[in-house]
Image 1 (cartoon, rainbow over the protein chains, first blue to last red):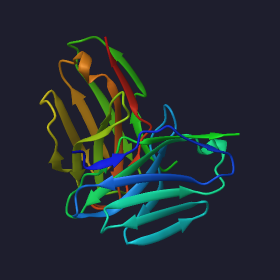
Image 2: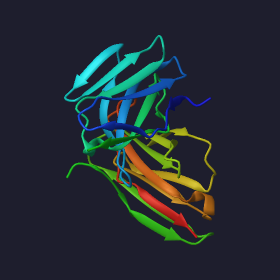
Image 3: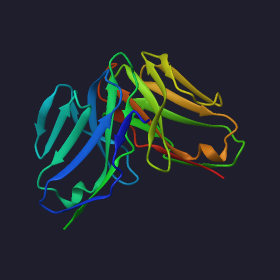
Image 4: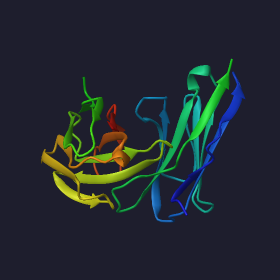
Length: 111
Length: 112
């Protein structure tokens, strides 16, 4: 079992819609969670970090964390074609200095 | 510019050669990493250093040897390159252990 699981997609949404990306993790000791965006041929870019149960909003992005269900999600409101990329979920266990990454979900936003 | 920078961006080499990838961060971060991203885009940790000290060494062939001359630099030397080493290698840094990581632009290694 992989430590972090994501649906590889592709997830296709029309421009202006809400894109919902999901991630589950296996290590209950994970304390910190991150969403990265990776355009083709580019490096991962940090979008959001979340540490506590609940929602965290930053502009059009909302990260949601449910530690009881071991579930992290990212909502992108008013999706734009420029949001088309692969989104990587990462978990960081406490006292461990290595990130576990999911294999990423490819998002296509159609104009 | 403040960033994590790695060189070279592209590296094409023959099997059996030895090559190095350099990484530098001017963010003042304590922790640096090497990650490998395979053709399926899966990012896997190789090494992690905190204040020049090796703290994580995943199951990586000993042909791969990291070296951190100081807190701002983490280089990766690879001996006897194999076809299976072809991948994108990312250097990253974090302000301290347990915090978000920032990635360099990557080095696409192709072994022929």
